[in-house]
Length: 245
Image (cartoon, rainbow, N blue to C red; front, side, top):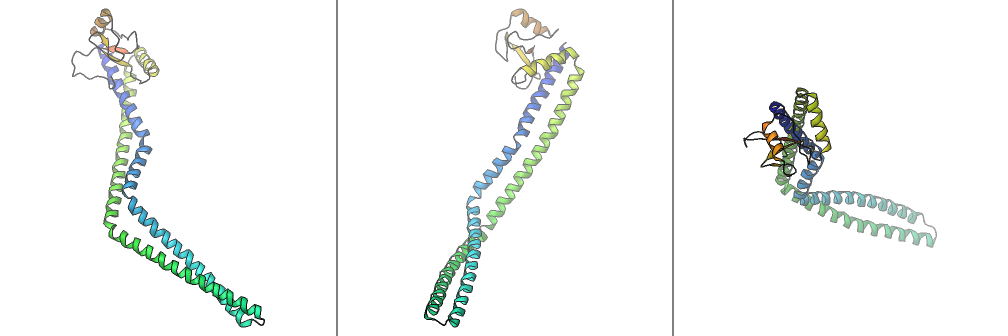
């Protein structure tokens, strides 16, 4: 029976390891988001410069398109002016041409402003290029280490699951069924608890002297009257104990 208890302890350790690894693997998406968030915060100023540069480039392209349209408008007005035969046609063409050229002048000023914003941002980004490269390298290294860790954890989970199945197969069916029934009912899944100083170390309820004596002998499976966990006695404190207890 003591051999069975040792197997049960090993089984519980494997199951605790499985739960820990599963929790870590399930948290992978959130942990990855946290890594990205950390580097986003560190690169905030750089990203702001990039956004300013890109916005200036797009705005310049938009204004230049407006200038092109106004030049066409001015050319049409000039043609209308040349073809005008009535005073009101002549006046309308002059006004149209003047309005178009005023718009062109205003738009050209905006182009110069956007060029200045673009060039200033480009210059500062060039100066900070080594910082950008360092941040990018650190982020890529962090993701690589993170992915490697996740891969190792997945492999460890597969090993722990195989160990779980092996230990279950080696246990008597009645014992393995009892273990599964207890672990499935208990919130943390911990089916075993150490009996020490006359108490269950999981629920801290006192054990009757007779029960404590039987647990010490280890001749049969004894469960706690309060939490229903399987009790075991570990005289050697360095002996393996179930994780989570």
